[in-house]
Structures are given as structure tokens and as C-alpha cells.
Amino acid sequence: MDEQGSLQKRMMLQGYEQQLLAARRLARFRVRRRVAMGLIPDDPDPSIKRNDFVEKVARELYESLIFTGSDNPIVEDIRREISDRLGFAVRFTYPPGKRLQIMGETEDGLRPLTEEEDRIAHGALLKVTRGKVDGSMLTGESP
Image (cartoon, rainbow, N blue to C red; front, side):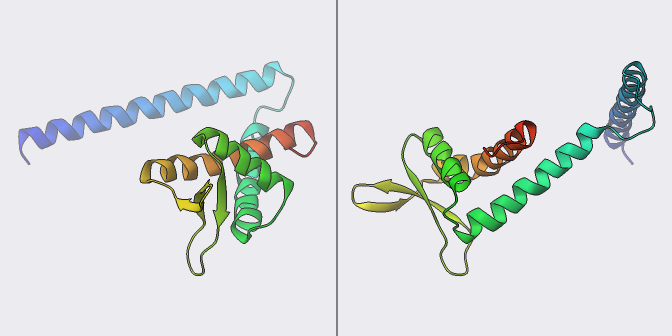
């Protein structure tokens, strides 16, 4: 192995070591925080479990309601938020055998989004959906 490759490996291993040290410090901090709060130190952090649950429900909402084209108030809220982010109204369409498509609404009908608009819309879709689920779980009310 040449000197360049050896140097790269050492630098990579040093980076991993720093990440491990930071993770250990963070774990110790979490244990101290839980003890200070009067909780059992080795119980799993409830926020991790909650985040996993929020993610699971958001994906379920995305797949069941949005993917199937449900006319649900939550889906309409999500559609409105994406429309606000893009600056124009959008509709969810479901071409046979294809994934969800988000289309722009114009006076002449629906139009395909540009690549940039589509990237923004799909990037926002799961984030907005997750935010709706997270907000409703926090308050106990529907979003």
C-alpha cells in the first residue's frame, strides 16, 4: 500500500475514533441527565422511542392516505402546505403503475412540475407529513 493510502486510512480511523468518543460522552451525559431527573438511568430514552413511532405513523399516513388518494382533511392540509412552499396550488395524482406524482394546477389544468419543483415538493412531502404527525402526538389533537 502506498503512503497516500496509508495516510487516508489513518485519517479515517481517527475520524471514527472521534465519533466513538463523542457517542460515549453523549451516552454518559444522557445517563447523568436521567439520574438528575429522578429516572432510572438504564431505561431507554423515551424521546428515541417517540421519534421512531412518529416516523412510523408518518410513513403510514404517507403510504395509506396520500398514496391511495384519500380525500382526508390531513391530506388536504399537507397539500396546502406544499402548495404554499412552492407558491402555487398542487394536486396529488396516481398514474397506474407509477409512484405518486405532484402536479401544478393552472387555469388550463394540471401541469408537470419542473425537476427543481418536484425535488422541493417530494422533499417537503414526508417532512410536512412527519410534522403533522409530530404535532398531533404532542397535543393529542388532530392536526
